[in-house]
Image (cartoon, rainbow, N blue to C red; front, side, top):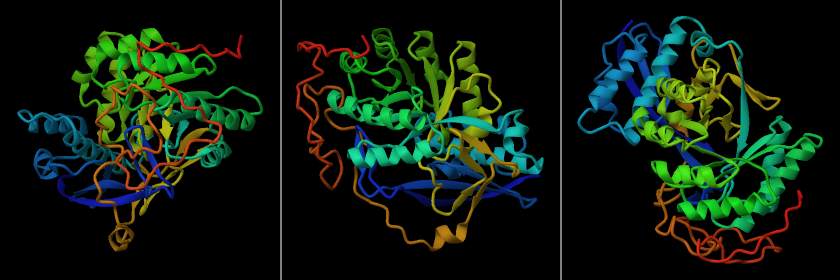
Amino acid sequence: MRITGYRTLTTVQEWGRPVGDANGVYTDGIVPVPIVLVDTDEGITGVGLGSHVEVDALFAAIEGEDPRGVIALYDRMLRQTFKAGHAGARFGTIGALDTALWDIKAKAADEPLWRLLGGRDRRVPAYASGLDIELNDDELVAVYQRYAEHGLRAAKLKGGLDVDMDRHRLTLVEHVLTEAAHGMRPSLMLDANESWSRKQAVRHVAELERTLDLTWVEEPVRRWDAEGLAVVQRGIRASVAGGENLTGLEQYRPLLARGALDIVQTAAVYGVTHFVRVAALAHAHDLPVSPIGNTPIGLLHAATAVPNHIVSELQDLQPPAGLSVDLRIEEGAFVLGDTPGLGLRVDEDEIATSHRQLDAAPGGPNVRPEGAGRRLLAMDRNEPRHAPEPLSPRPANHVPRAPLHPDLPMTPLHDERT
């Protein structure tokens, strides 16, 4: 079997509501989803979700090769970028091609990828993640009620701009999940998306922890700041999670050496081989690993075969337009099917004939705001954050405050648990 060519497509995830984080929001809820299809001379096509950046140059490293040698081909693609480096979107292209090769390998073996990789249990624990920073109270409750109906008892909210708002929203979701679980305490996580300085992170989370039990706080400071992440890790009770934007084991090593992470994450778009290698590195440090990303199908298969997987992110309950996936959400877990390969089918005709208009305006959660990490006051939610429309108003019962500067006094809250 030989690799003969590739094709690229772009579909969209249609959320039907605004989605985003502390850095910005897609107000129309339409997010692009790039796809890479790799063809072979035996008629088997592999599917990978990820970047198209420099795909011509990277495909040259695998063209004409046997796709079943996927691990060696992954390293060959890394070598192809030796001088320029493999960080950023280029690493996403490597990940998309890598995932497509794993899909081919499993299809050729007539097995689902989870079984080919050595997995035993097709169930992968999930947590809800609604990219929800723009939602008002009613919308937030409705979204997490839908997750709860699928048995999810853990949730990660976007936040980091206002400690009172974060407490309010986390408490709403806690009530939703607790009621659905008949009183069982849910797991709550907060994702700041690198929006804080070190001291801001400690003070913000410590304030939340007066009344809330947080399982983890994600990306509290910059992704590469090993010392800063370690400062936060020592200063709060919650675990510190990070790694979704790291590319290559060399970027993880200093963080793990400093004890900066409690939960090691990888992004779905960076591929199966990357995830397996990061999981092994984390396992050597006795740390759990957790994939993130929408439609993380390749990493779900791989998660069944690593000993230290803890939970995987579930974003939208529906796949991107033109894609169907052989899995279901049941009792708080992804349940993988028996379709050979990834179980991911692409309807190229539907994608080609659709006329979905992507917002070409700059901004959204992929652009770091100018003041991130150095705000003295809580950010006004009516202040534009790279979005063409104003954000939703605060709840009527919200009281403005001036938090988060390390030199300002903060009045302690009553701890209802004591």
